[in-house]
Amino acid sequence: MGKEQNVVEFYVLCNKLKHIIRSGWKAWNVKADRLESIAEHIFGVQMLAIAMWSEYKYDIDLKKVLFMLAMHETEEILIGDLTIFDVDNETKKRMGHEAVAKVLSNLANKEFLQNIIIEFDERKTPEAIFAYQCDKLECDLQCKLYDEQGCVDLKSQKDNKYLKNENVQKLIYDNDSWSKAWLKFGQHLYKYDENFLKISNYIMDKNINK
Image 1 (cartoon, rainbow, N blue to C red):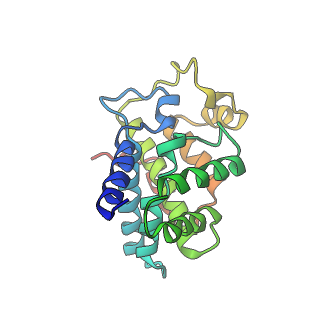
Image 2 (cartoon, rainbow, N blue to C red):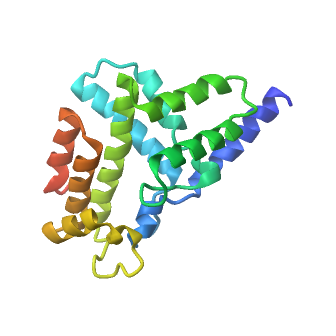
């Protein structure tokens, strides 16, 4: 297989992410003209990483972070957008690594790219920890935007599998908005560092869609 074919086939595979909608928004019955795709999430999280690196002066290799964030959802080309409510972490990691190996199989630098994804998943290096927090905070920000646009009706969630979770039920009951409950859930689950927590708290009661 020639280099030209390798490039085009990889591009065509990744192009599918433009058409895969983030599963969380479907599960919450978000009503918008169009819902965020995986590819749009990848763009958003990279822009967020650049902004966080710029403003909080993280001592990290930003190029490596952007590689991680460019590649971290490639598994979803084959396995879809699975969440913590669909499958346990270890199973998802195994499925993801197997899918990534297939997606990258014809690229000359596949080993480097696979290692980047493994580093991201292990969350042991400063770059992986930073990238992971960006990935989660981007989702929080998009939730806040949808909420401000009135895209979610908490009374119309008949088939919402997330509402079966007791922690989610309590957060919805204790808070006055969908996004506030989502943000509180993220703060508890993802253990943001001081700077990411500042952003999460900053958007809690502010209108950011100006």
